[in-house]
Length: 307
Image (cartoon, rainbow, N blue to C red; front, side, top):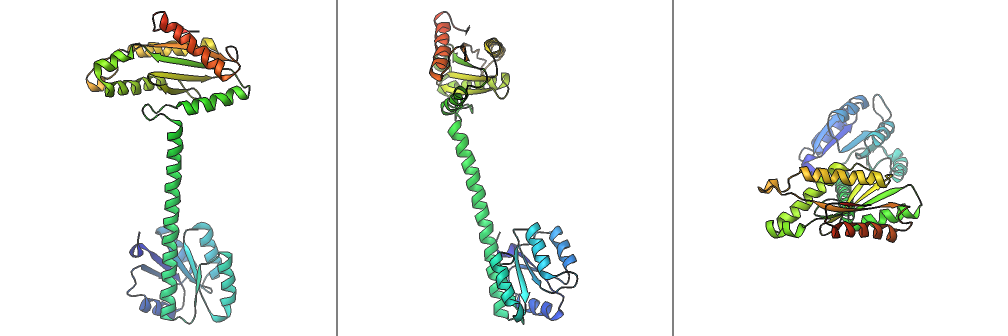
């Protein structure tokens, strides 16, 4: 938005003021609307975007400052100005300090004063608009950075940083029971050797999708590194966690991965389950238990669940 996109609304019932404004501002780039009463001014605000409002202190159907205060409440982004006579300028200076108005334009009107003050109001609006957009952009950027700090780039699952932060909190508060599933892909190196690293990465993304398909919040999946995953199951005991592991196994067995790349790849995994607090009252013991059970499954033929 630039000055040509700015619309200034004037509220004043004096015909000479209207004539002066039309004469002074005929070559200004912004749009100008003039009405003689508060009711019509408020109706215009409902119908189209207005960036600056200038009101006389005395208008037909409402006190001018009441109108400007109403606009401030309903449309805080609008820059508000007042026409005022010499005797009201001290009061208007106080209104500026209080934030009720941005500037006042003295009466009788002088062309240079009108143009200069309106230009300042337009610049003020554009500056505030740009500042608001920058704040919004920074806010979105911060949210994006927060997401990236806690999520794995490839799979979109949580990362190890989030896992340890969350589990340390759960263990530290001595809260409710939860289970952890360590999941390691079986013979995944063969998949990579056969289909290439890019397809290997794609396969891991699709396995992450299988995990999401099976679990429900507050449960969550973690890309633990390489071809390993961790699933955290708040409130689930060991038997329930075993059921979730079995459900993931069954879903994987029915799924053919890399179909989008023209392949139909079967993938399997091994699982190790530990439950807090029965398998460990601190985080290292809890994770070591699941890891050891996973290793035991791997050593005995893979594609199994260790509990």
